[in-house]
Image (cartoon, rainbow, N blue to C red; front, side, top):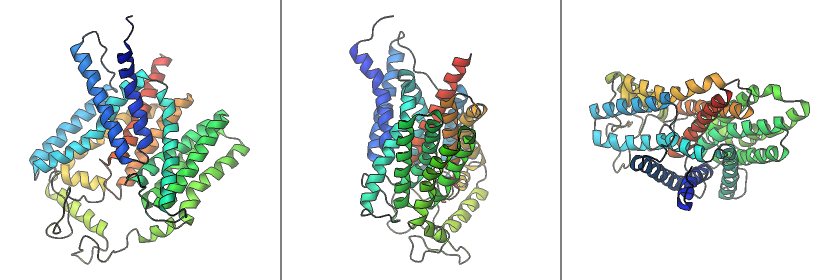
Length: 413
């Protein structure tokens, strides 16, 4: 086998480095994550360009055919919905933003093939990112345990969603290390959980205050047979931080305001029966779906609680603050089917491995299931499909789980 040049070796290792940088910065720095992902995408283009131009160069590995086919079907259906709907130009622009993070599995698999050990490093990178995020948000709160909807100074605006994804993953990593007797790893992931709880205290996202404990308990349940009584005490202390600290420091009060009418808000309530902004937007989204049941109204048209967009409104049109209603309203039943296929295809491949005896496979499968469940829970009260920082974590965890299960299948055969 011919020896690779130093440039080729460095090129091969650039992708894993950029994916690691994406995992680390995606927790606390939106700008850093976007730059890392752009460089990872450039690396992927170079790999495919080299494979096309040089027949002797290996083609980058792709995720399972079922996942690639689902991505292709989703793309084609949504393009049809955009072209059939209002303002196709605006819809295509929004679609580009939706598609961008969906390339992550296509890029992560070549990275894993070049650095298989990257899979075991990802949880540590996310844990380190949570520690950095905790420091930033604690400073933003004036070093006090208060609920201030912290965004962190480095510019991540979706911290609540990211915490909802990574807290269950950290719980799973903590449990795997604890059950295996790896003390240093156990201590690190316990520290990451403390940091995540501190960041959640400052951020106090309502969805995360509900989703993170529920999904953490689910992870604990699936790991329940691995623990003895002393370990369970340590586990209870770690999980208590996730549950109690954010609620006791003011986050619990936000539950009482979830469906509270906000006078003087950015959108006006025309119908007095609509007691909240979200309920009014859900109603408008459902009405839009009923008016355009097959391909929707298109991505280029949004929902306003006024007859016309407010004067001076800029940016993409607003959504209905409910992911499933939003997908139905803008892409119809056909688009909703493509959306489900996109997310259910990888889950259908992971589900048979949920009882795997291999600790790494078990960890990644349940990490992916937890992240996907958080996506559903968050989507019940917001439009989260396409939030880049959230999608980076979502598709990296899913791609890692698919890689791990395929590797486990190859080793078993």
